Length: 555
Image (cartoon, rainbow, N blue to C red):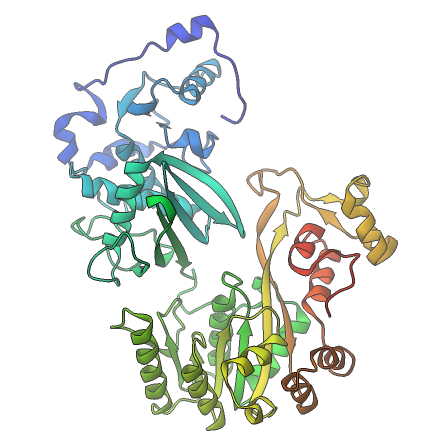
């Protein structure tokens, strides 16, 4: 329940702890090997009321301790039977005359499995409870991933120290979600490694290791019974040793598009008419190099994928599009996606990546997409593709669109190639900004005491004040967050020879001034302010990525 209420003496007496009833219900010993255990729980339209988004709201901490069904079945984690949140929930449910039976105490793994089953749609998987520790940890792994997928979490962080903390990155911000024992965390990390389909042969706790779990394959050791949620395409796992003997696991969730033919809608990412027109012009070029840049987690891969789908659709599938990715993150219908495999060390990955790029150039492509420029040798092959009459799209890690030239020059690309506008066609940089909930956002005029009020007034005057909104307290439409997803805000440069020459010669300030004044350029800051004045994002988001509004912009 959302509110905290006291439990009086009589209510406390009503909550006398019951011993597990082994003569009835879902916890009988013979049921543990019954493949229909979950079907029995959800039979005859029985609903899990405490499921996220269900009929009864509970916070995430309470949810992992209990489960209440519409027929009154009430399951409680046996290790938290005296927890205040459990007692509080029980008392409030009785006070509100909800149908709630005496609690049945179950292991935490069974509760996790029940929620995982419900979140996957009830009936899409057939789980039997087995009593091996490995199997139970696989259930826990699936439960955490299912919980994250239901919230469209981009990354799951598992920090193992004296205790284990599980944190979710939601809309770009870290939120503490779960807490367990150190032993649970160590077992969870091992289970996550064991679940991977692409990984080193053995888990090494004191080494940096990467792995990948594919969504179309069941978890190992579960006889095909446990699979990732249907909307999770794959998971990238990064295992990191950290100081003082603890462990740190980061899992990047890659989500599948609902449209089997591929989603080519760039507007839904947040692009406006101006950006859509520039992307169209770049797709219309038959040769040359287009680079999308930004930090990790800025949406580069999603933008690139949708743009390639759009390109294939515009050309009616009459072109040969070849991609080289390590590994492929999203399907691109109509493209030939070539994965980089059989490599464990960074040196081997670079070697295999260059082999795949060379193979792609020999495979009669019209358009090439390279997942990321990660080395000078890879960059050289990308430029070779652009020089040999192909259209090439790729990504790079930089802070801005102009910085793409600086980065490539520092990598060792020859100036004559960077100076050529027939090669350098498009320079794009983007960030993801949290989108305000349109139902609970608050006009800035109602928060005159907020320090941002004066900064907006100084930078944009009364017009800015009247058209700026701030994040609200939350409502049912945004699940009490005040935020509904994120939107991409890009800056796009279609350079000419003069701009490129100035950038190569380190005349960055002059090149940017020229881009803005002569090439009708719009930096990220201006693109973000436009969306702020349309009510899509708030000043906090603009200043988070672009600096304080009343300060002179870098460019």
